[in-house]
Image 1 (tube, rainbow, N blue to C red):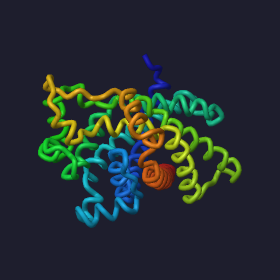
Image 2: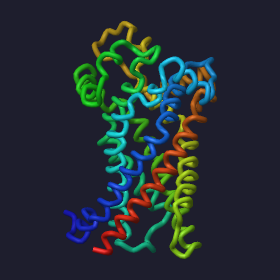
Image 3: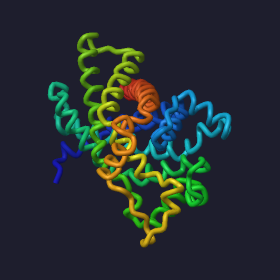
Image 4: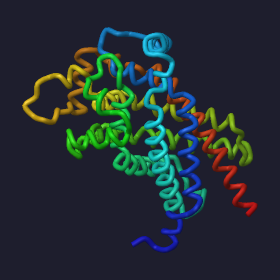
Length: 312
């Protein structure tokens, strides 16, 4: 049983402020740079032999599908992101408060990495179903996407129901293994962010401006993304069902999803090592800018709420 003092640290209002600020900051950032995420998804799902730049893909989408297609699936993504960021920020700061006993001196990079990993695992296990459906929602009406996806994935709720009905409850957690491996991404990101933040605040006498938060957020995300990108690529491929995969005859009513290792080997065989980094340009551009803006918005919102609480 958690001691009263520990329980109060877990259920503190401060953790709630961090969670709400993180969720709001994430939604603001994603709304701003969502077209780049759309491009990243398209590039990751391309087959070998196609080499296109971010600019080329944006041009093709706008000319072929209309400008609004760059924002296809934004609503469900924001819903999922809000839940995911709330869970992650709350868990991370609650664990941090308990582990440090409220003392800033107890913080360290390795401890942040461990706590970030635990928060990531909890986040993955609770929010994976939303991201499984999101990946399919975003590919609706895109050339090569199955008629089944186009017909049944009209909203987040409908998608969740359809996956549970046709693939079983386990289908809602498709790609969980690479997602669990990818907890290293936010863990590395938060470790680097907190490390840079602590050192900069020490150097600047405890003060930091919005641009400083923006830049250290960008550096932290770039660091984490490059190290974990191949797993992100495999995760996207596992969650998405292409038209060819859907139309292949199967002896089972439920299609078998290739394992993480099988997909990685297949990509290496057909596309080489470069295939594991397909879409990295768009991913770096999108995630770095999104994370940078998210951290800046998060710090400003949390700081403003903190000041208001002190006044009251």
